[in-house]
Image (cartoon, rainbow, N blue to C red; front, side, top):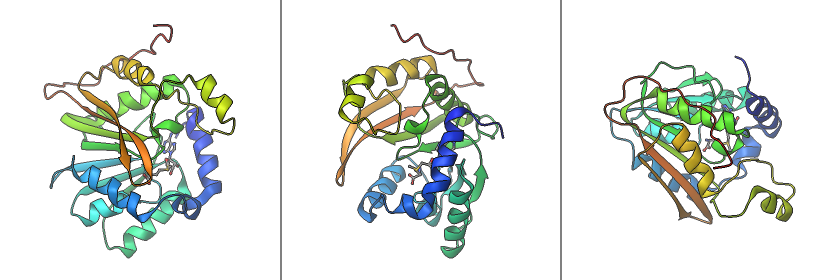
Amino acid sequence: MTDHPSAYLSRAIYEQLGPGGLAARTSDSWDRETVQRVMDVVSAGQRVLDAGCGYGRIAIPLASAGIEVVGLDVCRAMLDEAAQQARESQVNISWVMGDLCALPFDDHAFDVVLCLWLTFHEVLREDEQLAVLTEMRRVLKPGGIALIDGPPYDTKSEAERRQEDPQQAHGMERADAAYRRLLAAAGVDDFQLYTDDCPGRPRMFLKFRVPTTENGARQATVPDRST
Ligand SMILES: C[S@@+](CC[C@H](N)C(=O)[O-])C[C@H]1O[C@@H](n2cnc3c(N)ncnc32)[C@H](O)[C@@H]1O
């Protein structure tokens, strides 16, 4: 697997944090709420990719509900823990080592693709973010749905945000306009972008649907930031 820069960085961070460190940063109520929101877009019999699945926080409850799930992550320690928890829960899930920017799956392989918590926002460069959206779109079946969640967006510039919080780990410009620019470059027209309250955590949600007439992957170019 050839690493994109963000994948290389994320692997190093998550190997060090470990599944226990990640699990300590969530809560049962938030996990339940997230699973519920995912179930709202998934139907029985569908095939779901959990892209950046971590230790299986969402993939395992989905599989327990009878959904066919594939979990992909760049961090071996996360996948090993996910596989262990799946065995304990007696569910069958395929765990795949890979990078969001170059998904190792055929075109149109999934009905739903998830990219949850901070996963999308840990992809730092705009060309990589565009690659992720383009890849999610490519592996979705016609009519398929992608669901991304992350920190709420606002109208502050990245420079203003860094001034307020110099420790901020992720580099994504989290402005409404930035998402819209990326979506346009990835050829995504049918989307919903909104913030919503989850227990104790206001979240941004980005949901998009691939046209039912989709035939093949589309070329995307890095958007011009000046427009
Ligand atoms: C904040 S955790 C979220 C895990 C999971 N999505 C959840 O909701 O519980 C981010 C996960 O994404 C993975 N990740 C980050 N960048 C990635 C990349 N470029 N490709 C694949 N996985 C990545 C990390 O290894 C980590 O397990």
